Length: 387
Image 1 (cartoon, one colour):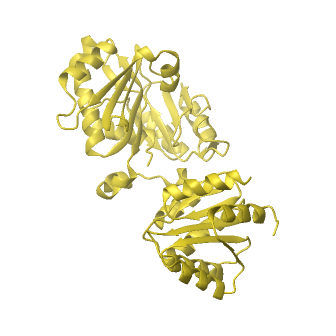
Image 2 (image 1 turned 120 degrees about the horizontal axis):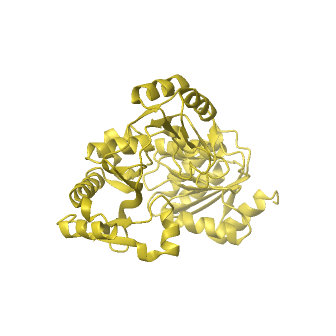
Image 3 (image 1 turned 30 degrees about the vertical axis):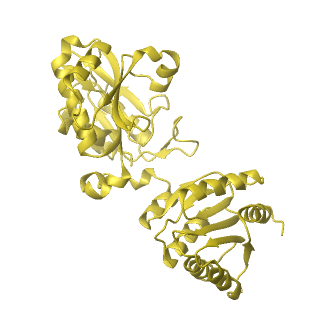
């Protein structure tokens, strides 16, 4: 789960990390009022969306009058901002962050994340801040320091000194060490998956997070009600948001053949074989192992809300869920919903014969498949209008 910049900075401040003074607003009037409260003669107005690249897309601007605050807020609020990370559909701008500008002496990079290769939390630091870290890694990898943190002892003082030397911040060691320890505590205590400060800036007042990005581990949100309350559904794909409410794992894709599968591995294999036979998957949809007939019906509704879908492939292996249960869900869904596209069903595993019999006896327009290759060929042909 992603957080907005202003939400990420609020968490950073709770853990002792300084950020520029600022306020989140949702209207033009609030933007002007925030600028007045912040004081000064210039402000930075930032669009709040769940994507990077806002500056290059026109979503961040320094303004030097209240009238310009109004003008720029009017230009952004209610609009869709398209950046290199949003795709062509963009993201809706419903909130802005109005901040006081800071006098930057140097720009640095800091992040904390989970490294699956070492199975450890790692801290990444670079003296090349304010630019994409991927580009730094490609062009000048020697400018990146990776610190692997032992979960038993946590972040150690000698590791903080390593970061200070790498960033040429020996003169700021005490404040940097406190900042690094705060970042590590925040990452662990809140079960984050990514914490990124880019840039971390050196100012006359000291070190400050000029921008921040935080991603939360969705699997741990059950114990962080405060973080879950920060979720912004408007920034998520509507179908993905609806799926999460029903415990379904759904990701929208660009194709026209919808997939309903149980198990992430089988779902990936299903999408691959659809492509092998000339089709393009419209989604990744894992109904999981604890599914019910009602859950399957909801999955069909979500699939059919995508106007691109021309055919549906239901591929179930009855090891973690019974085939007859899935068959009941399919029958209920087809009966409840005005099914406008062909449905191909392949069932294998536990209670497969009962499941197939239920489908056959239903007299519904369902195309049965005997194997994965057969199912893929039939659904690709159905999507192309070939019977």
